[in-house]
Amino acid sequence: MNDNWKNHLLALGARLDQGHCLHFGDTEAEKRAALRDHVLCDLSHYGLIRASGEEAGDFLQNQFCNDVRKVDLTHSQLNGYCNPKGRVLALFRLFRQDGDYLLRLPREILEPTLERLRMFVLMSKVTLQDDSDAQVSIGYSGADAARHLGSALGSAPAAIDECLHTETLTVIRVRGPQPRFEIHGSEAAVRSLWDTLSDQARPAGSMAWTLLDIHAGLPEVLAATREAFVPQMLNLQALDALSFHKGCYPGQEIVARMRYLGKLKRRMYRAHTDADTCPRPGDNLFAEGSESGQGVGKVVLAETAPTGGADLLAVIEIASAGQGGLRLYDANGPLLALQDLPYDTEEEA
Image 1 (tube, one colour):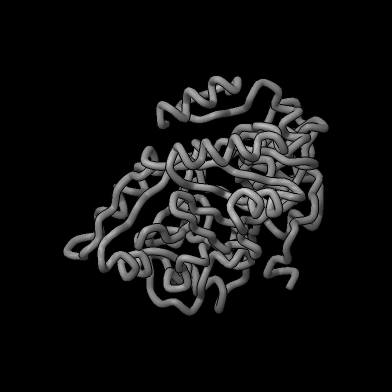
Image 2 (image 1 turned 60 degrees about the horizontal axis):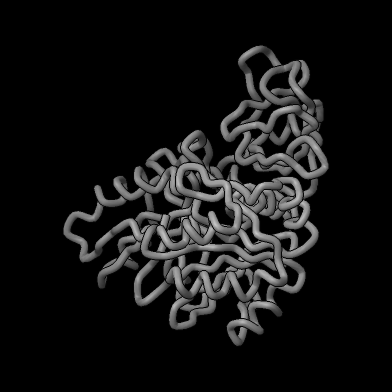
């Protein structure tokens, strides 16, 4: 984390852990604000990989499951990186900046993702580097977030995945229960924008932003869930994060076979549990009557809810989800209550 940015957060009362801000002292108030009002969130739990060079676009197109050619200065995308078996190694937002491509992904999987990508550069004219500490990343969410950003910057992205660039900032509109934006740029520019917006928003950390991701139905792939899911299980086809027409990439044959020759048996759902402790990514789910050791799904992302219990995203057997009686951890664990996603899945369509 940039030292100046770290000092700025600490002066505001931030509680830091492993280089990013968890919260500013009152997690439940921050989460309530995230769902109902305006919040400014530190996004230092994300890192950035920069891909530069005249063949960067072609290289990434051959590695990822979405169509990189659709990314330009005005349009970002969710995208994924699979192993040869079609299992997702990383899920990230891809956008352009200063002629290069940037991958925004959780810091905890940045290094293994970067190392694996570098294995396949070979003679390609592309350079891959960790750009995380060269920029600062924040998020802004709320009913009037677009208007506030427009007042501060002159305009704001109007559509999901749309990008706006200033001389020192990149602003991206992302899915959320309310208008929501990621902002990446120089420490001085981000700090100035934070100060401008802070009169209208509550400061919040990664926990509040994760809760917004869950309510938006946006998955993350973390260290505990790398190689656990194929793209369709994470609803990537419903999130415009998966292309079936772009050509070859690692795992493409497996992913295409599931679409054209198979039947999707698991997909991602949103749920709530009244469990006393918050589930963790990778925790198993069971259905009533399922045999010991025979899980019917896994937690993708979870965060405590301001009303109690926890909200989560989980990949679950479609047949078991339809029957109800889903439980955490084991066949006698806390019950899950399924909730609607804010978009149609392929199964529903």
